[in-house]
Image (spheres, rainbow, N blue to C red):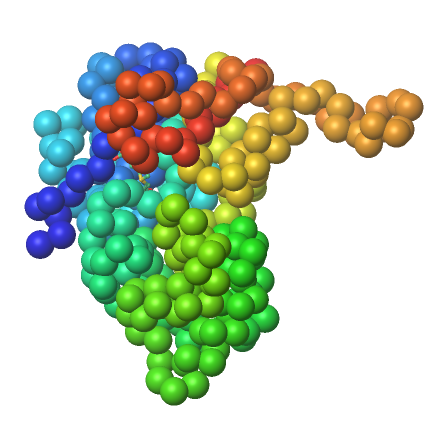
Length: 311
Ligand SMILES: C[S@@+](CC[C@H](N)C(=O)[O-])C[C@H]1O[C@@H](n2cnc3c(N)ncnc32)[C@H](O)[C@@H]1O
């Protein structure tokens, strides 16, 4: 059973705990619970405080419920963290003191072949974090138009061969549906000329793109971050870990906007927007993994942590 071997090493763990500035009586939320790597260390620091632990993946929730079973002050919520405002209202929370988002997929999701996230294992094309959600990777690969496939692979994968890959997918599925990760892998490999295969897998960008599309990972992320800030108490912190430039750009831009007084076009001589900063940046530059962490956890190499504090 999937749950018995849930492995995920939390990235930038101490940096997140420091960033959240945890108070023993505070209310905290982990919007991406996963295997509770960060949550466990947060809840260990609480006394009368409370942790709201959110994930949309049932396996992550059941594994974490077991891992955190000794703590009575954890409320588990199966939801998309983008519903945070509603979650806080439903739980009658006036405000929270810190929110953590460790975006993307867990190692466990990637390393479970039947979830279909990885080109390293054979599995059916699924890629859903939340099984109750309708669209799968199979639907995207077999039903999207060539133009839409090319757009997604280019936009969410930043793949230069997006059009060639989309063309090959459409050509292949004319004979029979593309149903497995290995079939998709072969198609992508065949669409990209060998001399451009490089050191890593040539499939990485396409799989990332389809995963982002299936889970709507970037849709409304900016709005969700702003709503989370609205839910923070004064002095409360929002800490976000990203793993690729697309999501990092969204986080960076939202944090910049929220921490800036005037957001008028630079060519306008006087301020007409009346925008007032609601947060301050806790660090100007994103925090990245130390050499020690990089040696121990390869996944940390692309991680960037950004933290803001509510004014
Ligand atoms: C990188 S893992 C988090 C790992 C966790 N911090 C730990 O140390 O164990 C990301 C988790 O967030 C969940 N997730 C991703 N996007 C989500 C969303 N929009 N709403 C709720 N959960 C989400 C995934 O299902 C996955 O379990």
